[in-house]
Length: 141
Length: 154
Image 1 (cartoon, rainbow over the protein chains, first blue to last red):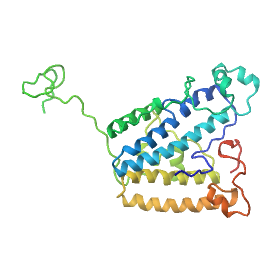
Image 2: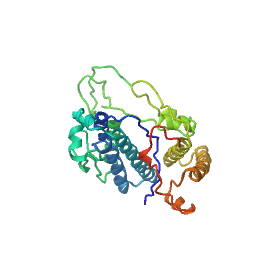
Image 3: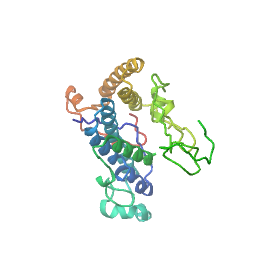
Image 4: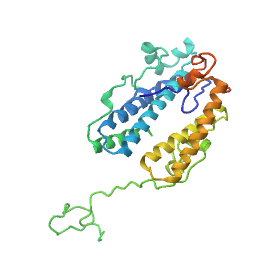
């Protein structure tokens, strides 16, 4: 069960749009080591976890990642807020995203590859899963 | 233990008979220091700014430790308290018998509850359940969390 809290975990208040930066940051939303993958990874892996301490950690961190996902989405939204036609045309890095999604927030990697569960793993083997978590979290740093 | 380089182990059952490793060395000895009970902690504003409650976990990024500058608004103060409750909660998952951390958890949870009630009475509900206690339905009122403007006073 999850309940929505109508606030972000950390303030996001961006004054100036920057579509070029948004085209990079979107990967932290829907890329292979982004927040969507992180939350799905931990919240799926916890069912195979036999130890209460680690059930707690996977549940609590998986939930926190959902909050991170919301912050990253808010950053992308605000970086593309009130864009002018010229700002879109002047940023070829963002134009490819704009073709399909305009300024909608869509879970995709910066490469344009849409979010896929193929970039996470849930093996049912605790050690394999935790090792995968280490790799994914190291990639995020 | 003999850690001379270049030796070769004559003992039967040694896993590595040749090479430049010390004789009979294990191939790798990784270790992960476990976070000990009652670790040093930041106050709530510093914790939110640094993204961790624990100085011991605040590893340098690009060789420097640098928190964010945060405005001091009612929302940020609530976010800071909530962050400490969240951090202590995860810490207690792996250190459930740390009595001092649990006492601090209770203390911060009470502070957060009071701050949340004060915030909601001024600015509207943060939880759907609090929307039931107003004189009218205020859940839909702006700003939504992703719609904050740079000079938002909240």
